[in-house]
Length: 303
Image 1 (tube, one colour):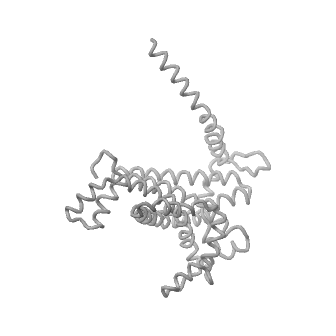
Image 2: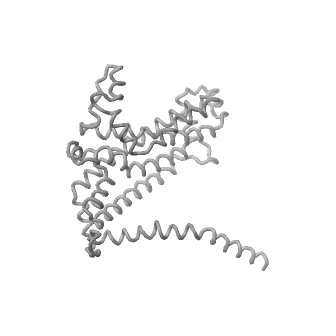
Image 3: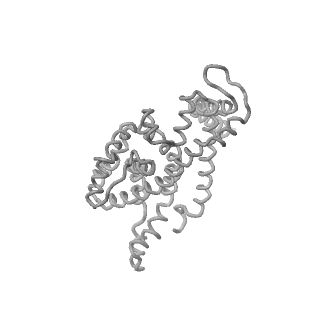
């Protein structure tokens, strides 16, 4: 009886500690989500009370050509950005691991760009990617290449935004550095004794050893890329004249959602767009979770 009483008090104490989080979750996350779900079934312009319209907003979203364009741009950006960021982060982490005692200094240097505010980053890359005298094209000219008009040619706007997204690769690189330090050196020694080349060591020792971190970064970066907004909006949608010049090449899904919500005051339609994006992200994440069972090795498993 005494043990049962102690367990009950501990349970009440646990719920008491959880209460602030539960209240905050219901008030600022679950509540707004459910209200957004209700708004997605209405016409609501913030000036008159919502009017119930059923699934009309969802049917309009399926037929909206700009939704298709925005989703295509977003998927295109995600497919390029996520692998490029992971490959670059893994390369930087491998170099940092070999830096020895100076790893702390270089780790700070690699991470510092992450602290750059997104709007300042957009302004910076408008200068760096300038097709006439930008630093990126100047760098390419050293090797005999003529750089494209990154910020004005619709075919190069999304690749330019991918290049800009690599600026914040430092946070992923730090995660990979921590994962690499946990791979036992004995595995590399055994692989070298077996005559494995550096590439085979990377493929059969390093990747299985950090597969959990790779999986985490793929999921997180995919979700973030599907919601890309601030940098692209600041670069191409801050001035209406500039927006018309580049067409819809930089129209990402969340930008279209933002324009419908706060430009056209169509909160019901914007809520439907938000739930459509939520469904897409849920499906993509579910597929990634299912695939992880085949490619992710746990600590207790033999790689």
